Structures are given as C-alpha cells and as structure tokens.
Figure (cartoon, rainbow, N blue to C red):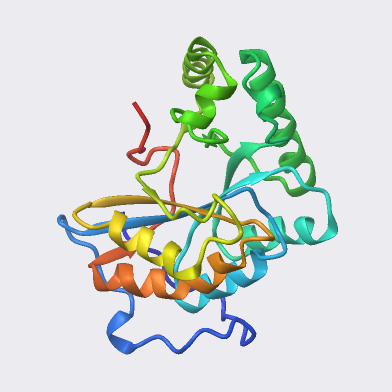
Length: 240
C-alpha cells in the first residue's frame, strides 16, 4: 500500500523544523516497510497541532475517536476528515464498566458513537479499536474473557474489522511521560518489523506526543518506512 502525499499546507505555528530533503516521500516496493500512525481518544485540544505536523511531513494517519460534543472537538472531527485522514471507531464513553459489562453494552456504546459521527459529519466506518486493546491486562481486569470473545465474533458477523497495535509509544500511561521516552519507545519498537501499527494518543494532557511526533516521523523514515492509513481491508494487527 503506497503512502499518500499531497497534504494540506501545514501551519507555521507547529514549530517543527524544516524537513531534510533526503526524508521526502518515496515509492513503495514489495519489500517496503510501512508504518501506520494511529491516534486514540481524540479529538482533543492537541488535534490541530498533530494534524499540522502530519501535514508538514505529508503523512496521513488513522484516528480512533471518541464522542465529544465540545466545540474544539467538533472542529477536530471536521479537520481530521478535511485533511484526508481516517476517522475510525473507538468508543462513545470509554467507560470500561459499561463497554465490557456485556456484548450488548459494547454495541450500545459503539452504535452511539456511530450515530454521532454519521449525524453530525456524515462519517461512517467499519474499523474499530477496543478501548485498552482486544487482549491486555487492562481489558481483562474489566471484562470476563467470554464477553470479549462474544464481541469479537459479533463484530465479524456485522462486518466490522478490529485493529490492535504492535508498537506502543507509551504516551498513554501518564502526561508526565517524557518526549524522549515516547520517541525511543516507537523507534525501538519498529526495528525489524515490516508492518508497524503504532499506538499514540490524541489527548489534551499529552503535550509530549505532539513534541515527539516530528522526530518519530523522521526516525521511521530513516529506518526505511513509508506511511499509510488503515483501511477495512488492510492486513490487521490483532492481539491473540
């Protein structure tokens, strides 16, 4: 899958340094490594700055969004869509006690998010990311295994596709996680991988995610990656 170019002109307010010529986009071949930048939990007050950095580097990303009716968020959905990125489904409430209480609870939450996106922006998606991922300690602390399995089976029946990740930036742990920790976590995690699905967060308190993003993109390009968005028919990374 070839990377996308032709992005909207970036804002001068991002403060990122000019892109070295040698890091400009290049064509994909059969052995090409592909990185998928994914951002969970937005839109936030950081969304515009994230989008400006992505525009500057001609990179498209996939945003797994929540429901948020605040004015900055409503603008954020429109900007993500307008600038050619993917808006996918994460959660309406992000309340684990509701989402993982039962299969019905999960889909009530998911359908609420779908109705919100469709009603306000005309956006539909079949691409889903479980809050906390489909298989990890956090999810298992808040749901019995059979509920998650039932949800996975029902997603397949209904024509949804779920997507986990194989590179964790660590930016979701705390707003105090340093910029350098985020950069190092990504660039170490992507070594020796051909397909890197990278977990990042679009959360207002996570300012260091925005600060780390330019060096992450440059580092991935130096490792030989190009960038793409996740599609419903992409080869998905899923926890087992």
